[in-house]
Length: 389
Image (cartoon, rainbow, N blue to C red):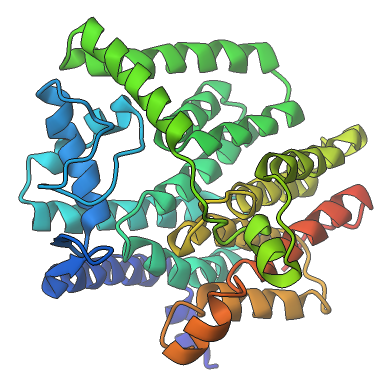
């Protein structure tokens, strides 16, 4: 590769343009596709997920229940916090097609900047990480979901901790949790840093402020009602799905079906196990590995994990591979992860292979599962060394 081409493909401006262009094209494609039939019933727009987010703002300001079905408007329930519904205000004032484009551009640019600002050893390595995550981000925005935003917020949290800004770290984690509850797992990072009491105080402050933020547009009694309704919906939101997860892998490969709670608790114990290596807390490579482990864990132990959520896990894999000294043998695992996790939902895999092999055997999740156990073993065995180039 000539130096001019190498300079071009590793240019941050070029990559930003690529992320934006992909977001615009993906959005226009969703708009062009028109309506889609869900479960053989009503037809809704292909970007139904975004319609759910957008309509939640109107349901909020008109004091409607956010957590019931609105079949005349959308398919499926809104499952996020009332605060998230309020945060959709800037997107609700635009026509839905335009707000979709802005939403996907916002998600992509946020993730781009989170990776760009992450503590990689060089601009070149950072560019490689952006290329590595690009396809999975595209998969995420094709569903107009929040997952690229979650990945970005987790990176911002780590950066804030590293910069000794616990007030910002607390803000980013609390925002993550108000979008998707599994964001609370990121509080594990607190254990690696000093200033725990300050962080906890700021977490409480941000939590209370975000909890009460919808009072800007609704009265207190309505907000209390919404939180009760949200809790009731979450309690009853049981699914027979095993998702693209450890539970799905055990079911499809081994035919075993242990209680989901048992699997999640076992995974939580393993996630926390490396923290016994207290002497490693001062090692930034150990801290990076912990972040990568958390980002992968929240996906592979989520029984509702779907293809669009894996941008979080793949970003975690990028933190591990590009933030820690690579191992020649483990390159095979990274290649398999890119092929089966990033490319399996695409036309790189013929439809018949996707339907008969990739989806039934949750092959998108398997490399992430193997990688997560590898990271845990490396952390416990002190096998982490810093990348120098």
